[in-house]
Each structure stands twice: as structure tokens, then as C-alpha cells.
Length: 223
Image (cartoon, rainbow, N blue to C red; front, side):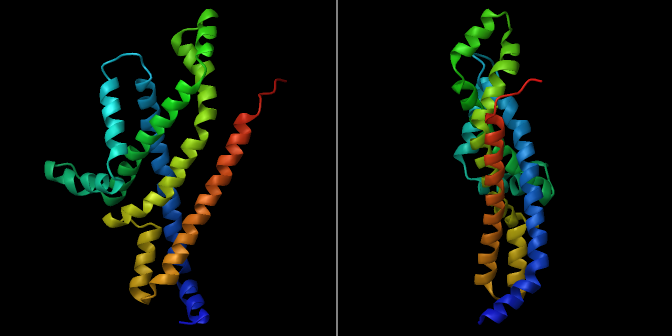
């Protein structure tokens, strides 16, 4: 197979691959937002000194972090219908990724909150702020800056993990690549192109991560 044939294959495959890339991006961002909606409340529950919800939250995070994402996808898409709960492939994929990301994000946020100097709490309480006010106005702004790198890494991992939902026929970059391979029988250049596209997406989000870190690291200016 010469270079001309490879270029012809890639040119013909470009629309399909780019469409799959777009779905991968949308899928990853949607799962990240879902993960934040799950992870933030979990982190708040897990920093409480006591409470009935803390141990279920700890078990959930341990379970999601300690089992393979592929198994979680299978449980949601293939397992739950046996007890009467069914999801479309797209919904099952987003749900699985969101639940998984939520566990990792909650741990990142929890660690960041606990990483804020305890003196900040004491100083806030001495000024008359309540626990909730201290958390909202003093601790969380600092914790978010600390958590940005870990949260960005979770998003980059989500971009790569979207390839797993191809096993439940969700159209994203990997499934699009497999569909083209099924008609061209040229796996090597197409898989390498898919890897390159994943890499480009990851680089883009690494740049965004750097921007956010610089932005959040700047002191606020008062007019």
C-alpha cells in the first residue's frame, strides 16, 4: 500500500471520522458536566465531619474508582434491563461516563478542599462567618484553583474513555473508524489517524487547562 492509496483512503474517510470526532467531543463535555453535577455534591457530603450520607458516598466513590469503566457500561446497558430499567445506547454511555467521572471529580474536589489551610477556617469563624459562608466565600474559591489540574485530567481521560462506548454502538470516533475499516480493510492508517485525532483533542484541552490555571492564579483586581 503506497502513500497515494493511504491519502485517498484518508480523504474519503475524513467526513466520517470528523463526524465521529465531533460526537466524541460532545459526548466528553456532556459527561464532564454530568460528572460535575454528581461530583460536587458528593465532595460536599464527604467533607462533612459526620452524617448518614457520608458512608454511602464513600462506598460509591470506592466502587466507581475500583471497577473498570467497561464493566460499568455493560452493567448499565446490558445488566439493568434484566430488572426493567433500559436506556438507549447514547443515554447509557453518557450515564456511565458521568457516574464514573463524578467519583473521580468528587475525590479531586474533596482533596482540594482539605488542602486549603485550616487557618482559613479558623480566621473565618473568628470573623463571625458560618460554616456555609466560610465554605462558599473563602474555601471553595481556593479549592477550585487547586483542583483545576486534576479536573482537567479527568476531562482528558473522558475524551479517551469515550472510545469504550463504541461497544454499545454509540457513534463516536472509534466506532466511526471501525465502520470505515469495515469497507476499506485498511486498519493501520485509520487507527493511527484516530489516535492522532484523540491526541489533538487532548492537546487542546491541555492548552485550556494551562489557560485556566494562569487565569485562576491571577489575583483579583478591584476597580
